Length: 411
Ligand SMILES: *Cc1c(COP(=O)(O)O)cnc(C)c1O
Image (tube, helix red, strand yellow):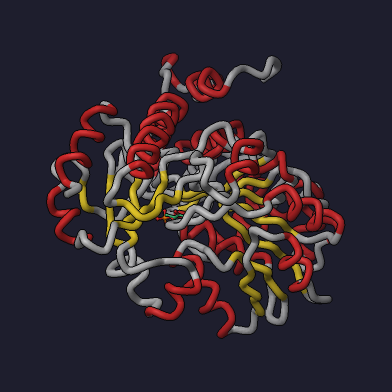
């Protein structure tokens, strides 16, 4: 597009500009697994990366491409590969770019399943240091000769710590490190990782971008900032065929989709595309609901502590205000010892007891007994997770209904 339009306008008109058949406003759901060519040279050229085209749906599909384009536009990036889930995107990013004996510096507050897959990668020879990324000094101290990647999230789940995003970006670019930012909690509407010099941006499309709890998906976006000429793990065959800027994302597509097979279905891509049209509207309501509720909880006698970046009491409130266009929909809080968290949760009538987040509906979960149960008491303590901690993912309900629900349940 010539004129850079606003966030929502760009998404709304993204498919139409691809000129789908009959003037359709959406890219259709292409269910074909394979594509036929009149002239076999066309197929040969696609296989040899000489022209863009489709051969087999595991590694590319027009419905999925339309969604990939939207994510690229949202992130102000260069190119995106979509996956079947956020976890598929994360595991493909690591497994397609790193080798045995490479070293990652990762946040110690990672999403539980990301932490777990990283632990698995250490068993096949990748080295990982988990550090408190709220302080750049910890990242610097963990740096080694074989460090290739720094992996952080914007806002940590469930205790909402915020990485020193900007300083880590500067450190990575000075040291030729791949800087991978999982932007799921903020989404590209609240935060553009390219502004802190991220090389690759991960999104779980399942969460805010899809937004309705009805489709799984994930993505990796290359911001275009990293110089892949300096990256030692690019396959020689790609260097012969692909322009330098697209080397990284192409290797992720080939190894992650063609070989790894974590492909997003066209049906899910379509649901996520439609959901993404209202990302801005949903997040504005979500952020405003979340701030009102966080203040309500912080003032409540039976609440000990609230973790929400929008509160002045949050340790990284200043950074969050500078970097993000809103404080997101994730918060967590501890109840007073007098209130049993299971009893309290069961009293809630509108808020749903569920493990997802980024839904239009407000969801709550007791952290220690569910998503962080496997970690054990000791690791939970290290991560600042008390037994009574409750995580909330705030939705777009009418604000007063949420306040009323919490009011009637808190006694
Ligand atoms: C949910 C989540 C993921 C994983 O995404 P799925 O689509 O559920 O596989 C990764 N990172 C973060 C921060 C998440 O919240």
